[in-house]
Amino acid sequence: MANGGGVDLAVAAIEGGAVGSLACGILSEVEVREQAANVRSRANGPLNLNFFCHRMPDQADDAAWRALLQPYYDKIGIGPGTLGPTRLPFDEAACAAVEELKPEIVSFHYGLPLDPLLARVKAAGAIVLSSATAVAEAKWLEERGVDMIIAQGFEAGGHTARFLGSDPAEALGLFALLPQVVDAVSVPVIAAGGIADGRGIAAAFALGASAAQIGTAYLMTPESLIAQPFKELLPGRPTVMSNLCSGGLARAARGRLIDELGAVRDEAPPFPLATAALLPLWRAAQDRGDWDFLLPLAGQSAAQARSLPAAELTRQLAAEALELIGSKAHA
Image (cartoon, rainbow, N blue to C red; front, top):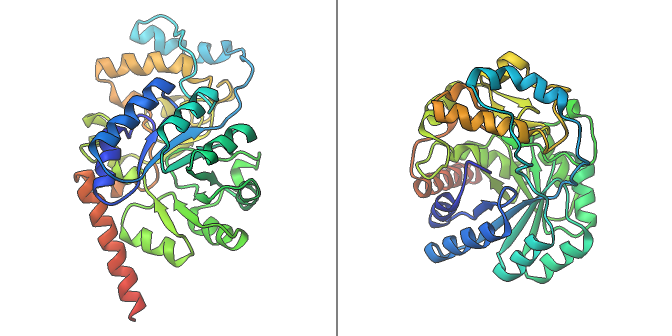
């Protein structure tokens, strides 16, 4: 939940009885240490540090991408952006931070880090999770020793974890993917994507999940980092898979940029390089209050998100699920 979650949300989730999580893919190792220490000082419970494991592409020619965006630069009245990529892969510095912090859980997106780094994470005592969008990815992760696999359905907000090169058109929804992954591996499976209430949690458990991972349902909480104007717009917006945010496919709420350019553009350089030219536009639009121009990452369950304090929402989700599971067990 980069740019959506943070210390306050992680603390509140822990206080509500869930695992708190920090999105570390956009943080420096110094920021990872600072945020983790902040959570530890305020809450007593399990903490997950989430990292991206993509391989950085060679610097691509983004002239076509910048030309596509130039009319927006001209309209807003700013010069071309010179920022670098905002999503960085797990590396030596991040691994050293994990060894120092010793979080209960470390989760990865886009596969796993290099074997020596993964071995050090395990040696630090962390439970290792990673996301799979297909059975082949789940098997690949199990073969490499992950402790639990996150089955990420097509409904999920943010970047799809697809990492073995399958056709995006073959992407499965959670309730098709989940039982297939459960049947294919022997480690516990966590359900992720489109779950926003107790019904979704109970259904995931009925299909074999050992836990549920929930993100979009928390975007409306006061602890969420997204701006209030976003919170007001989000429930009424459909979500689409788009590469405009970063160059990689990610589910985001539809806005003017997607309406005018289309959801997927060949001009966008590969993940995560597209962000360099786009982020200055987003910052300028935000300063102007032009919220419809931005692309908040969100899943298909955004309309079900509730404006409750995150700890209260966590307890409510658990109570709803337990009531359903209990009633079915006694039926």
